[in-house]
Image 1 (cartoon, helix red, strand yellow):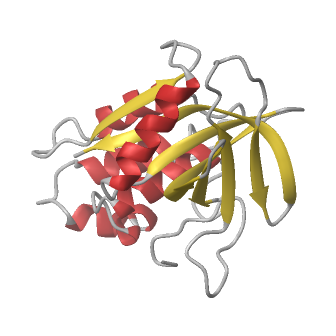
Image 2: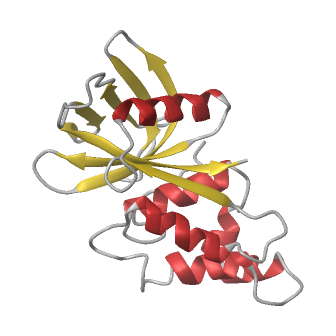
Length: 204
């Protein structure tokens, strides 16, 4: 699991970018060496400009990867599509959020469960109650009567030696669609209230 885990600070300073790179590695669209080393990225082609080099320039050059205000997932998906536009098997991403697409929370939870149940991760965007937001990768879930518990890879801190995830998000199902900041993010640094308001998937 550590070979797939990217901690914020290893590559750049944006949690959404870290989470996206973990998604790509889990999907086997790119490996860690191709992310960390430009020479390794060049080996993936015949010497021409390739998707892996565009990926480094787009997200890891320090020009965009350190974007202080973070990424909305629509923008993240658009820029990733540009990176892989010339690849035979394109990386197809879809972003869903409650703001621009009027997705109800119930629809987000259903898409999360559907994707993870099929064996694939989901990038989760979380807005905190007080200030700021965060992005993580959900790799597992369990259901309760009133909530969906997500087991996540959080790029904000290290992985435990004997664990498969390092953070948990509890999402209320929000049947009536009017709850605000009803979700909870559990991590090494404590418990924070907020809301899951966007997700990103890589279609297969």
